[in-house]
Each structure stands twice: as C-alpha cells, then as structure tokens.
Amino acid sequence: MNRFLLDRRYWLVPLALWSAIVLASLAWNLFVIQRQVLELSTSQGREVFHMMDAMRLWNARHGGVYARVTEDNPANPYLDVPDRDVVTRDGVRLTLLNPAYMTRQVTETVRELTGVQIHMTSLKPINPGNLADPWETAVLRDFERGVRERAELIEQQGRTFVRFMAPLVTRQACLGCHAKQGYRIGDIRGGISVTFDTTPFAEPLRHQKRNSLLVHLVGWALFAALTLFALSRSRQQVLALDRAKSEQEALVEQRTGELLREVVERRQAETRLRLLVDASGNGIFGLAANGECTFINPVALRLLGHERADTLLGRPILDLITPDAARDQGLHDALRLGQRLHSDDCLFQRADGTAFHVEIRLDPIDDEGPIGAVVNFADITLRKAAEANIWHQANYDPLTGLANRRLLSHRLEQMISEARRCREIIALLFVDLDGFKAINDAFGHEAGDYLLQQTAQRLQAGIRESDLAGRLAGDEFLIVLRHLASQEHAGAVAGKLVDALALPCHFRGHELQVSASIGIGLYPDDANNANELVKNADLAMYRAKEGGKNTYRYYAGGRYGASWSPAS
Image 1: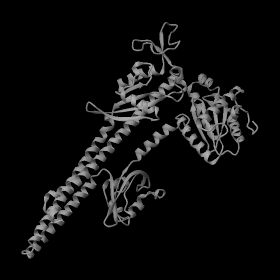
Image 2: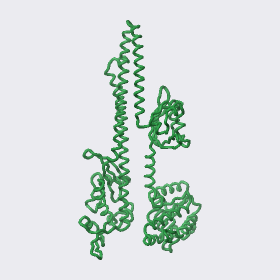
Image 3: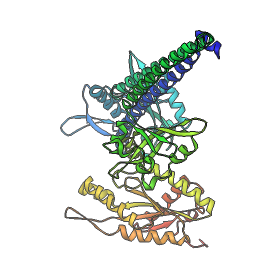
Image 4: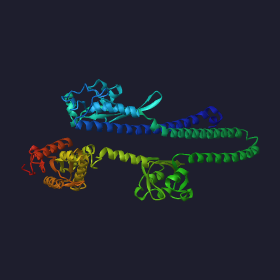
C-alpha cells in the first residue's frame, strides 16, 4: 500500500478506472438519446408509409382513376389495360392512373413540399424506375424472410437522415395488375422506402446531449480532484509517519490542523455534489434503509406536486408517492435486499392524488449490507400515451372501433390455440351486408359510413364479452364465438344477428335498410388454422347469398347446410 501511495505512477489506475466508468455512462446516455431519435423517426416513417399504402389501396379498390393527359401527366407506358386512354364527349383526353403511377406522382409532390423522399420499389419491377438500390434490395429480401419493417440512421453531407421501409403485401385489389407476375394474395411484391432529415427530432435532444456531457465532465473532474487530493494527502501522511520518530509532538499538532482543513474541504465537496444533484433534469431522492427520505431535489418535488422538501424528508416516501393499486412494483424489495432496479413501468402519485408513469432507477448504497438507496426517476406519461395511441391505431378500425384485420388475425390464432389446448369449439361468422353498395351509391359515403357504424354496434350488442367482433374490409365483418356448448349455438347467434341487421336505420330523414348474409365455419370440424377457417366461412357466406341472402349457412365440410346436425 505504501508503495502505491509513494509512487505517483500508480495513481493513474483509479483515474483510468473512473474515466472508463464516466465514458461508459456518457456513451450509454448518448446512445439512449440517439435511440430516441431513431424511434421518433421510425414512427414518422411508418405513418408516411401507412398513408401511401392506404392511398394505393383506395386506388386499387376503385380500379384506378382517370386524369387529364398533360405534359406532366402523360399516359403510363407500363400500364397494359384495354381502357388505359379515353376521350370525353368534349374531346378531353384522359388516361388511367393505376396505384403505382399515382404513387409516383404523389411522391414527387411530397418531396417538393416537405423534402421527404418516398421510393416505391420491387425485386421484379414493371417500371425500371422502381428498381431497388442495394439497401432496398437487402431489405426486400429480409421482408421475404418475415421481417415486418426496417429503419436505419445514415449520415450524408454532415446531416443525419432516417431510412424507413415497409413491405407492400398483395391484396385482392392488387391482382388486376400483378397477377400476371405470379403474385398471390399475401405475397410480398415490393416495398416503399421513406427517407427524411432527422433534424426536427434530433434538435430538441441536442440540449439534453450537452447537459449530459456537462454533468459527466463535472462529475469526472470532481471525482478525479477528490481522488488526487486523497492520494496526495495519504502520501503526505506516509511520509510524515516516517518522520514521526523524531517529531512526534510536532506531527500531532500538524495533523490536527490538516484534519480540520479536510473537514472543511469535505463539506465543500458535499455542497458541490448537492448542487450537481439539484441541477439534474430528473427527479432524485435518497432513501434510508428503513425507507425514510434523506434528501430530495427540486425536480422531484415539482414532479410529485410538493412545494417544500420538509413534507417528505424523514418520512416513508415510497408509501406516500405510490398509489394503493400499484404497491407491488419491486421498489420496497429492491431497497430491502440492496438490489438495483430499472423499470419504465412504474406509477407514482402526486400530492393531489393523480398518478403518472415514470421511468425509474434505484441504486443501493452498501456498507457491508444495504444502508439505503438513491432513486432517479423521470415522468414518461406522454411517451406511454403515445405508445398506447399508436397501438390502438394499428389494431382497431378507425370508423367502427372494431378490431381490424391485423388484430383479428392475431387474436383468432390465439383463440384457436387455446381451443386446441382446452378441446373447445370455436365458430367463425363471416358477415357481408346485402345491398350496401346501393345505399352507398344512392345516399353517399357519409350514409354508408353511418350504416357501417350501426352495423358494428348491432354486431357488438349481439355477442358476449368473451367473443370478438371485427371489421375485415368494406362491408365485411368477422365474429368469433368462443366456449360454445354446441355447434347449433353458432346458428342461433347468426340468426339473431341476421334479424338485428335487417332492421332499418334512419339517416338525415332517409330510411336505410340492408340485410346480411352470414357464413359459419367451425373449429375443429371445418379447419385447423385461422386462414382456412376464414376461407371456409367466406365460402359459406357466398352460399348464403346464393340461397336468397338475409340468411346464414354452415360450411359443414363444404355442404353449406342451413342448419347443423351430426348427420350432415
């Protein structure tokens, strides 16, 4: 030990270790901030993709749209359909804009107005302009292996851009143009890449990066200074002890003065450390081993809705700020066991009783056993709300509020797996409205939307809470019935829904009336997986339409019975 203190070259070891720790902490903080930029940018890219995909689907479902032939809008040389170009009675030349052609024109407008670059591409492009670059080619091959989307940050000309790409999945409406290429429904036929500048997302975080750098720099300098000071003092003490044989009394007097100075310096160091804690952007408070609050910074007081620190100091703060319904969050156990805890799924309670989501770090203070902890937390309520909103938009139909195709597919697979384990019966009802197009054409899309909303409400009212209702597309709905006592129960529910949907609706003085044709597929009798069950229920629905509509049919192994019986 004396050799370590006397030879100053060894002092580089603790400084090097501390420097490595500070650099690792700084790198982690900068990585988290950079990851936030990527997450925000990815969300923006995903929204742009969904907007473009929805526009393409609208175009495809309408068989394309005609527009005037102009210098900026020539006929599409890659569109091979009989009525690509037409002339109106007034002699105006029109050309058909298919989804791909309209997408390319819209992307140019988007780039002109916002600078966002959108590129529609494929591994088998009809138009050479849709040829994928190397990055897009690699991502498209990943899509074929099941990857859902890809986002990366790239540096160009001293600026950071995000590249986001998601696949284009072949739908029924797409086969008019792409069936000749060998695509089938569900195939990945290409993708849309979105490239834009991340400056709007990165700029607000730049101040946070500067603060993080400053905090780490000050922390490093403070600890290094204290370490060098302590080592220097210790070295002086060792040297002084060597001279103590001849100067015992003088050394005692000298050391008394040194100890007094050390106390003052330590207090000054503690004051500087306290100022550093108070300047943090997060809430920070200390805990004794019994859970009492030992210190708290102003940010924590503000987030918890308290004005004075003495309302929490010396009191069991975890019990005061944790809602009764969220007591078991692991904080008490971590404090008692002297364990670290990091979670972004905790709830705190303000002084007025309102709860909010926090991301929290609990770091124990040990001295041959836990003697307390330091808690660092941040309010993430807005982030949690944004995540929940994004999930709801991705899984529920915005018009009817029912589960969309994505959530239906996921939940149906889960229900079938559960039914397989429990050996239960599941019925899938494929509901299609009769005469909906006529209502839509006669009274407009607002009337059609109102009718779809009323249909959704009647379907929801006609089933149990354990069942699932969803909108597949257009005027097509799916109902999943669980825990059935018998196969006949599915027909009873279907009959009740047929009667309910046949009742008229009133919209702005008009009486709107449609009926419903329902096809019933049973698991496990008619199919062993979700896709096959939907397909068979769809076939049974078409038999209901052929049978006069306003009725239902069982698939029954392809025999499409009006009712089910063991002999059928």
